Image 1 (cartoon, each protein chain N blue to C red):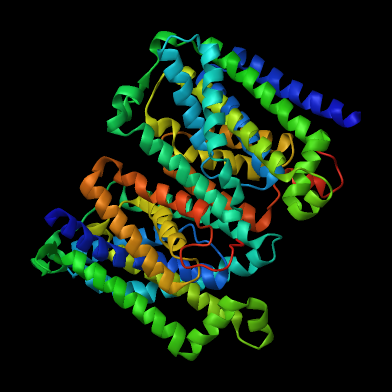
Image 2 (cartoon, each protein chain N blue to C red):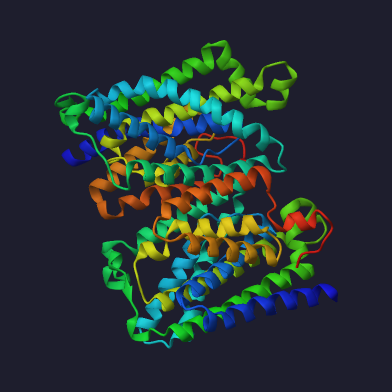
Length: 304
Length: 293
């Protein structure tokens, strides 16, 4: 099992880095966001890398998780339990949206974008103020706990990495990739196509939902546009494409490198980053469609 | 009854305008089999051109219509040459183009924010012509009628181009089957480049009326406009110009009825209509073939 050992090492190193980093680097909210984006990119990878469905509206699950968890916290649930509520809310939303998987390619992506925008508009609608506080956002300061929420984020990250690793090594992950390449042949070979796709869809939503919950807990004060911002989807997509989808290390590398760059150059003018990421997407599609890891894979090197 | 009549007439004017918003996207999709996700951003650029013509030079925004036509057909040719031949070589050109145009849309939005600032601009009603227009006893701003007329005219001209000129016939041949068009010696590249340019120009022309009908122009309006256009052409049928008008009218009427009777939920409409249409009529109301994008 040399491959399994490689995966275990990769996960251990990444987690150890995130666990030790707070002692060396003072800005913990940057570390938290980086861990969150690694998990989000890997969650998107579960769906896009292994099934080929690219959800532009991935942030819809993130936001739903954030609101689900936060409303649970405000209702008096202990935060750690509330994260499960957030994940469950996203899974329920994904289950309701399972029919979207009947669409393919661009139709799926745009329909998913539409549902994320619809979720944002529903949550922020003034008519629902008694339930969701509408456009005024939520305040969780009573439960604010940066330390605990950081560790909760690392647990979520560990579970997500383990999930991607499982897909990368197991027959189930192989079956998913077979469905991605050719659904008809995969069905002929005995792969339960609908079940496999739906499972990946729900798992991917659960990842985004729990990350969203932890994010909301860490941030503690936020508005609908904070957690339903389209740029969250864009980040997750860019990180995944840049590193290389359908691998364990690709999306994580992409997220760590590009998010570090994002923080280093400065958050003061987000437009420059929107510009750079936009052009990066264009360049990647034209010149490096399978990401950084494909440079190694092309030379016959196995990447976890 | 009075309110309903107003909503229906306004819905028709808006509907014709929404056909104009959608038809360029539909043409690009039909000919190139590419979803131009930056469609809304080109509309925004066309709107800014009209804005600066008026605010800097004092010209009527309507002058932006011919200028946009020339400018954006040229821009389309340039972008086509830069991007599309390379895209065609990738393993899954449709999905690749989709991601690529998403990136392009983000880049355009960022550049527009850097150039114009991140706030909404609008034009005074008088810029386009004085007063109001009365239709069947209801009074509407002149700009709405102008936008409706522009929509109707653009669809008619596009129809004449596609069905009554040789170049249009060749364009339809590429729409029907790219391979066979290549095999019969048509210069598919040039035809596609022109169709792409016309698609962008139609978006930019629609942008001229955006300050009036979409409530203003701002650099970050692109995504919402693209979703709206996509909704319009999906309700009709992809690749079918007549379908775009049907889609536009249904969308316009639905929007006006929502604005009249349930205004706080009206912004939700495009997204709901899109998802519902895709799930119930996957090939559009007028479509016969199943989608394969």
